[in-house]
Length: 319
Image (cartoon, rainbow, N blue to C red; front, side, top):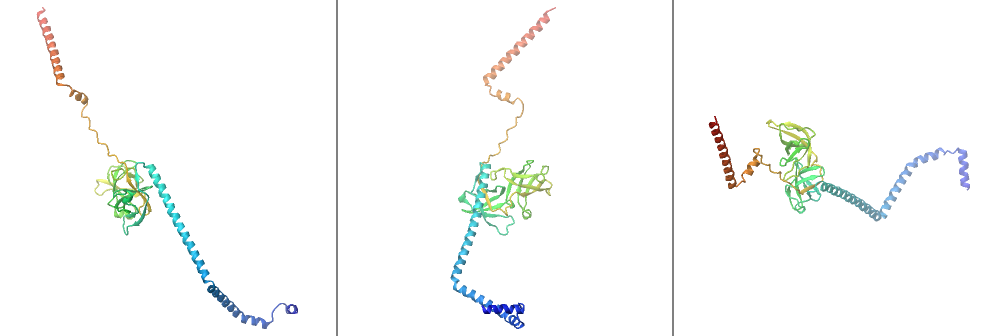
């Protein structure tokens, strides 16, 4: 108590300020105090790490495991979300095209390196009912065709490929043509509709769909016309078409493994002349009936001749 009282009296008498000697000493030892405190903290931290290293390691491993678990949950969620979207798209396609048979949803598992035509490989093959030549589609439109089918994988050739040829027509005017791919157009994300009649009505913005064949079902959206021009030969036109589906960006597709296709009906023969029905009916008359009709006609002619002769005789006799 006496010491505290002495400090209070000293502070009052000095105005609360330390004497110059004390202030100088404080400034000299202050850096050393800070260095000492820093070294003390570092030593304490090191000693703590050494003493609790095993606990820290176990906690770190636990946190890593929890992070990996969260990553796996995110992956599973994304996979289930994609599967749900694929199944929903498949249901919509099945309802829209009741006569089609679809493969299970196919995931794109590889893309052909340096292929300008964006071909790719899916994870379904013969075991899922897929055959070479089967059309590949999404809910947005046609993508291409299967060409290299194995037990559990299939290669897909896209609309960009020059080996792909599909009969199509314009929805607005029914103008027909053939969809083909090409190197230059594929680089810009387009394909070509060739063999269009040079007088046909086709224009930018026209919707192009498949016309139907034994290989491709009718009514599948192909794309939209972005440009039309005359061929160099001047004998026909062509149109540049933007596909409805970009093959380079698809991650999931469906393969049409079966569909009903009806051959176009044969043309009916033209009727050559009017009254042909009467002629046809006449051919069914028997020979006996024809003979009787001929005899009747002869009798009628004989009676008319006799009447005319009688009239001539009476005129000659009369004065």
